[in-house]
Image 1: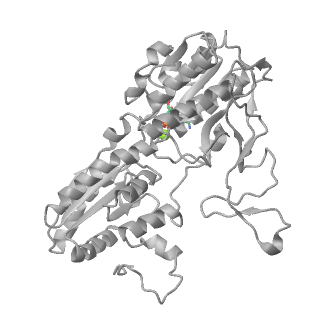
Image 2: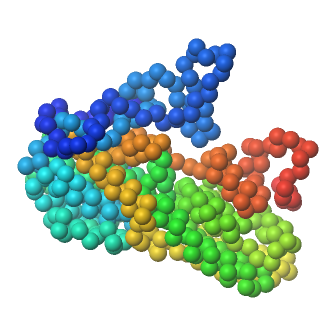
Image 3: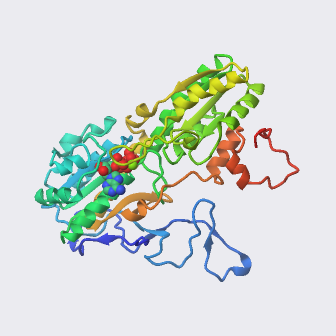
Length: 463
Ligand code: ATP
Ligand code: MG
């Protein structure tokens, strides 16, 4: 597999860009994955080595095949497609995410107003289904002018396999030169298949993705749109859970948040809230015995407790569902419902009374309108997508690394999912904020560097 960060183009961009008064970016400008360097006095003559707990060291000098530097995004002085004739299509797939409509609107506006694209844009309805079945609407600035004020996807979305050969037949038949795929890892894997099929047929069609993952688990890039809105939206349910929990004797406010494989939303929302006592993440294993033991300890100093649980947490303590959704994603067990019934049952077995108040705000969070940060961020990503597409780049997504906008090859973006680093700043901040003990697997990995300093929390009996 090509592991480099080299960005493909479908042809030499020969046309002058119609954009003026902008700073054009050149193709040989790159952004380093890790900007941290450690200068060792004795070894000052050697190349710098990056140091970070969260990202691999970045050796320099580098070249374009280096897997740790990414081509800078932005407008190019020469473009490939002619604004008079270029035909664009947009599709949104997978789950909803705040900011989808901002992306759609900004693409239509940037192409129309900035590049002078004349032809109305095909907006495919209900994800890849719309491409496979030629179900589309026409998108113009007039059509999209108010959609940024709506949640959900203006185009609709879907899961489920569609044949890439049929989709490419239709893309060619409709005369599409640029296909923009807005979606998660499944969508971008599908986009890569479309790129491969287009390449097999020797067609100069650009396939560019705008990554959508509310979980913020996309490989390499700092942040995906919708993530910050999700954290903001999680605050009200956490606050409600806290108020409810502290209003009854041994009240346990339990909030389930999104995060199938990575617990970034639960982690960040809990740190922001300051009211959370226990955070359960897919990355940090726990057992029911440990959880109950800690609740008992907690009830000795306080009469209530707030638990935030990511949807992918604790899947190993439940039997697998054995089911997959239409797109082949594993259907998870409902850890929230399980904890809701299991916690009071287990506490009752130890003659401890409790009441669980359970809140699952997932759908409310993902379908809402983007907050101002995500609205701006998704707009800029959309503009970067237009610049890359008009310059004839393909088989890539746009993202940001170290606050710089970059191009990431599709295969690289779907290489792995970003996970919460249990040795990283945010996880440590959460432990500090909640006073929660480090769970079993973490204790095995991290020893107290100074055994004379007692752990601030009592050790769990089962550890
Ligand atoms: P979410 O984060 O909400 O899951 P997603 O983009 O991953 O977003 P999926 O439902 O997994 O959403 O996939 C969206 C579309 O991409 C579906 O039409 C699906 O068939 C297609 N797809 C998913 N996985 C692949 C894959 N490995 N190869 C090709 N196409 C895929
Ligand atoms: Mg998916």
